[in-house]
Length: 72
Image (cartoon, rainbow, N blue to C red; front, side, top):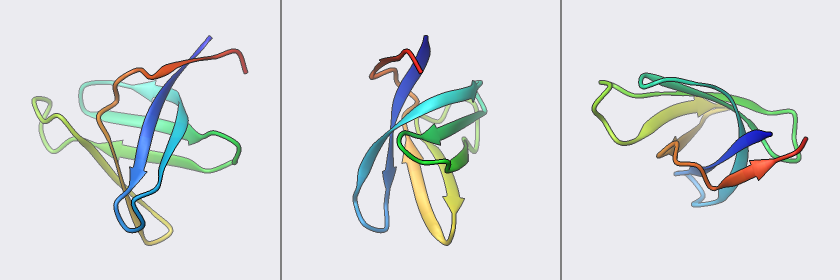
């Protein structure tokens, strides 16, 4: 089972589900569902609540909270 989180693009306000590939208190590496897009998001400090990352000129954020599970 793969953990799912929500990732939001702050440039267009779209929120998508993403499969967690790696996760720690400092970074979150995800693959956006339905695509081959991988995004790495980081926290400035381990106590921050939001992970932030950039991909293709767009900014993405996530709390890293579990929103479900995938069998894929």
